[in-house]
Length: 99
Image (cartoon, rainbow, N blue to C red):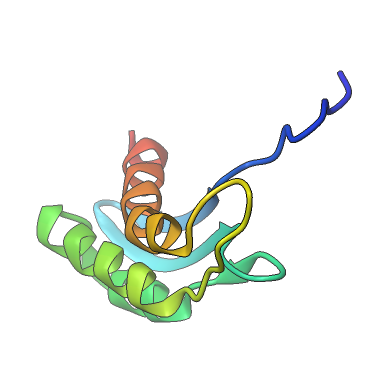
């Protein structure tokens, strides 16, 4: 399938978790559409490392992501929206990866 006019993402996320049991040994987290290129959110990765992933940890990760990204306004979305939703999207992506 080919892309149609203005068929572009407002925001996207990717997660790779290295889990041993319920403990995250390492993580690679990336968010797109919040900078000129896709960015890894390393502060959020550091929050996960060595911890059991629970709601409290995920809340800290979401906050770190929102603080770390520097999106712009464009025709697809506002910078404010992307900044606010990036942490939520990454949190949900982690939850789906764990499921």
